[in-house]
Length: 412
Length: 87
Image (cartoon, rainbow over all chains, first blue to last red; front, side, top):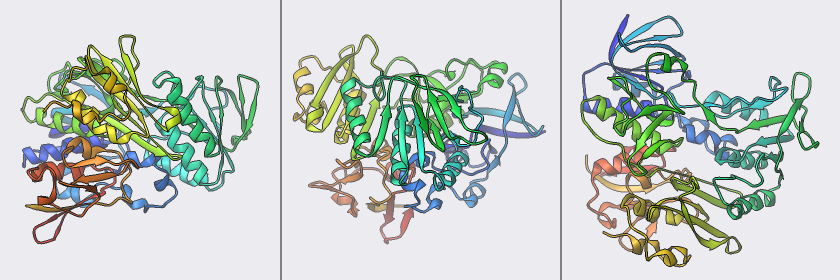
């Protein structure tokens, strides 16, 4: 049996950042990463970017680490291997090739998987998900022979895929189960700005329905919708969310909810096991509740914090994270916690007619999040206002004034 | 290492804003969702000499962390001899 001091399951940005940070702190101990993908670290965030798909930037920009980097840092990368069993009592991870690895400290940075689409005919060729580099390669190759495509679901990935497909000259239909884009996370006005941009860009949108069956012989030729409509297409991209296969982790005694449950130090309930990145359902000190996030900067900074704590420090994780995208002539940014929970007060900034529209979400007299369309410049001041727990009583009218400079509310 | 000069390659920037999270006193996003450097008197993609920064006291470690956090490696750092130190 192999043995390592630090074992990291997951070779994405959380796991690799953890390995890099551990090496900075601890120059000599053994570090091993197990990755289920047959690749070194790449930029997952690039996978949905039209410029990458359409090769406007070279394919090789996707690689964030060289092979030599792993060697020079003495980080062992076992790629193309799955962890299948956790024996936390004896501190052993078993891989799908039968090998066993004994660890002293374990990090579970296993990320998420694309949620499988449960629809009749889902075995046909021409249905794509986007999560891994292999998924992206399959889409890049399919795009070249596609004339008509359907994108399923509203969200960042779907928005970016619609733009990529349109730029590739493909007819695109977007099918939404909801009554507007990104319901219920966004309000109707924000959703309509996005829909209007999509439609101006040539995307047909069908709302309030979903596929009842995918038709075609071996390959997709179209789909039936529950509202009775039929769409012809050769390609379907299903962006219907992420789920994590946690059974083997649960079986090893680690507490699992939507994600792997952790405290603010990213420690799980089992000694010497931490989690980081998309798979972590952690205690967020800013919101004082358990949250699970799926974004790049969260994964990266959690990898760093988990590494500090694995190396014996005691550092809580605290970050206001966000995600931004641009396409069809608009920019969309989400900051902090954008869930419109019942206790949230929401203040609007700007109007859809003016082309820029933001919503600031408030809980218990403090800003907890914001959604910004064409107001990306406000991302930095809003992040600061969230971080510093600025009380907003008395400032409501300023928050609602789209011309008001939010920086003025930051108390230094 | 002493970081002397910073440049953002706007053609590579996708507005992921990880630099804004790690070094918000130096980087922000402009109206086109591209990262810009905050000078004492202006904002653009650089090149920026360290003493021209609004936050001239920023540490090398923070600048390096910001550059390393970029998912498209769009932030370039140079030392006092003009040698590229990252990426």
